[in-house]
Length: 499
Image (cartoon, rainbow, N blue to C red):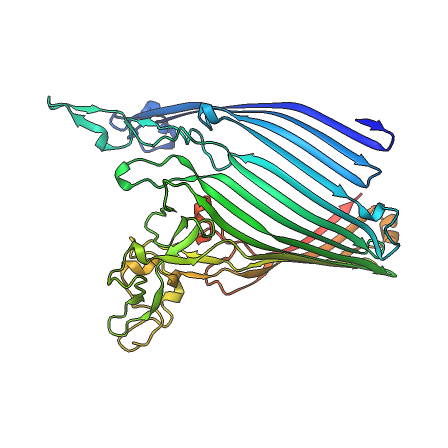
């Protein structure tokens, strides 16, 4: 840190290195000599037919160099610049693309500190702007860019060379991508912070424009490739919008209260796609409503067929022939929805009066869709959503809104399984009481508080699934209700004591 009069500078430079070794070994065999837990070891197997031993080891290595300089003048003019040089080990990226350089800059002006700023209800005002680049490998697994070789796991790997003997061969089971590189996000942010009426009222507004280039995502090669796809830099994704935050806090005698709310508006779009790719589509086993990554659409939007009622004669869903060619095929699929909400919001209310205190918080979103896919189209005996049986077609109900039981396979790929995913959830309602301090002194305790809380107890939504706030294991399955356990309602009674 260095000061020159009213000019203040702070400098920072550093290095970081990380190396994590992973090693695993797997062994199996059977059958056991005796079905008894005392014989549940590999020393007690009665044959060699089912013996199998495998293992692997790999290193996760990362290296970074970074520096930062900060400047301020009279706490009115603020500036900061930083630079990172990040490197990934061989388990992440090919040699030519392992390092990335990521700069960032920010500036601020506390205009309320200026001599010319009038004495008004605004007691603090700050304008700020920033621009920066950030690299990410979060979507990568180990060696996703390399072609791997296998000689186990399938009877198809046994071949005869003409002598009647079956030989085990090694084959590639994943495609490679020697051009894989860092995923990079470039973001511009412009904002204003205000505190008014002796800081009782606060307001923040941000405009952001974030473009992610070289987005790392799974590829979908032609089926005839016969291999698991390598990761690919699929394209560019734009996220832009506005965030607003407004809060007020005050007290009247012994009564203290506060309220705060925030809301965000988001536009999401794939703005560029690798020229070698027309569309990247997810494959979700036998489930038919799938997501796609395509230029001009939200990231991983839901793609399928549009329906136009139910045929009164056959009881089958009427699928719209979008190009009027008399065929229902891939060319007739359209965007059915997107899991990316247009609006997200939240609010918090709290008050305290003498020993009583109360808190309530809510969150919600709108403008997004969810698809129910926890069924399996290849398992006719599996559970089906209840809504399919409400007003379904029968011989006595030919003007139904849902197709008959045993509908065609194409029906799984339609908008009949896509719903409005908007919701508002009361995250917490808590009421507490702190025992008087005079009583605490008598029993030699500092404090004691009892409370009751309802957590995630109330959810308001039109989504017919178990929970509109869906979980996801991969980026390409967002918005798909695959039957993950829903958020549980909780009633809590508590006592907090300090001695």
